[in-house]
Length: 478
Image (cartoon, rainbow, N blue to C red; front, side, top):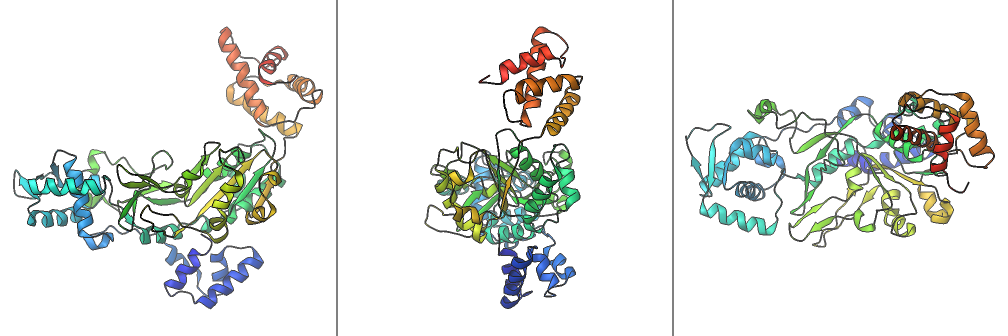
């Protein structure tokens, strides 16, 4: 999303193209965020920018407010009702389509006048008023299901999604030294490394972490990712060119909304909603993939049977962090994988394609972390490494760091820490073996000790004997 905020400010008349170009030049020379550059140069006041970036998702009151056509929403309602045996309530449909009560009422008036539904029971409208599809309504629902079997939350138009995504960009987060230390407080590392990691994440750009196996590359990326502040809004689905893309994924997105199945929230949506219910309020996503990643996973997934799309894995990481773990061990050649991302990383935009041939533009707004224990120069050439802003080596742990990690692990597992046993462990299994210290070893060895004690139905103890037993099962090539 390198240019989107600036371009949007120009589009909305708050900046001129000339001012935006000046802001970009200043940003490149000073290494600050574009938003800071715009206010520093006096093109927009801080108050104006804050007001502009204020997230507003007003509850739509009329069909036109959704950005979707009457026909589109009508078909979605009929499909949902059809799959519920053709009988539905206003409130039930409002919940199923994530639409306010008022809009569902408008749709019902339209389809009643077209004789697609009929009223069951009393004539007065209530949230529990029941309706039934007519034969004509069933036929239209069946025809709509043949075009697309998607049934669920009404989608958000691409234009609205792009606007909101830009306003909650990772590049607008203010991160400082205190935040970095707080996010990494459970890890043991040097101040020098922390001072490298902080600015890298604060930039909102791509990061290359490399180092020996087990030194904590993935732990660092996850800790900083989960530490990102702020809530964001994620659409349940997108509408692009008449096609539907399912976006919200409960596996990868953590909703922080109250349970919508709670009876108290089912009484009247028009009274309870504080923002457009087609969106989910979530934590910033942290998505990690490893050796299973293929190029296909980075493209829209079209189901020829259901006739709708699933958003690609990296697109679901928008406004958050995408971690490509064990880079270089995927089933696809690293150069092919990185070639796919040259434009997104450099220009801040991606261009997904629909099966109809339509390509559309979406901001590429995520902190992309490449993590590898292989030599970076063996994986990619210098031209690509240049496009990755931050290259950070995660060194092996020192003896002091190793001891502190082991001490903390013993405290967590309730095992007595013995400094003499630690010296024995370091001398016999590291110094004499010329073995590299890795931050993952203390925890793994301690878990071996605990598992062995559990098998013997004994209290786990950190002794020379238990260390030897654990090392015999853990290390290879002794």
